[in-house]
Length: 271
Image (cartoon, rainbow, N blue to C red; front, side, top):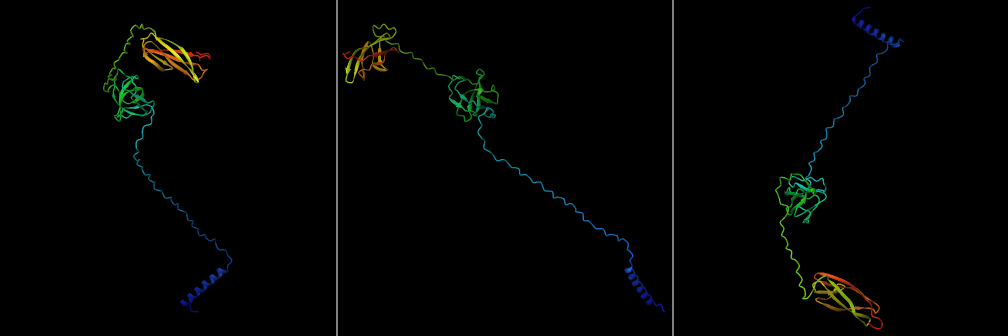
């Protein structure tokens, strides 16, 4: 048989096919296959986004109107006014003494300017209200003060007073023959008369002493005078059985003496 190249090639192909067939029918175990590694995906941690810091807006406080001071002892005066009235309040007086009646009452929390001082009156200071309307002296104990007093202008605390002349009462002119002396009074009823529905009494009065000039009264109602000597006047009762009771008085030289009268009603037979 001629072994041409073509024949050789054919034989090679046939041998290869036979080898494949023999391997397919062979009961021999194949070697353990090398497992194909399974790739495990590793989660790449995702970094949480960092939040940008929130900027806090800066609030500019709006201008708030000044509130009036609360009247407490903790109020602090400003340098401009130098003093403030404490919670007890105080009086603004014309002089540095409580003898002077306050011309104005200053409530707690009132701001004051200090305008004068006298070391001879160490408990007082001369002040002016911030509106400039009032000046006067106040007790230092009633103020909270934030400055020295010794450098204040020297101010005389007592105003100049105009004395009121005293006019003595006129000396009474005595009636001719009047002996004067202590004042006293005679008084009694001298007559009683029945009337329709009641009765009347006539009362005699006579003053003694004093300046001998007398004013007579019954229960404060003047019945006569000023006059010298005695007088009579009438009193009335509204009922037959009702007595007349009251005070008769005499006034002389500014002095008054009073006597109580009890006048019984007239009897059935007359006076």
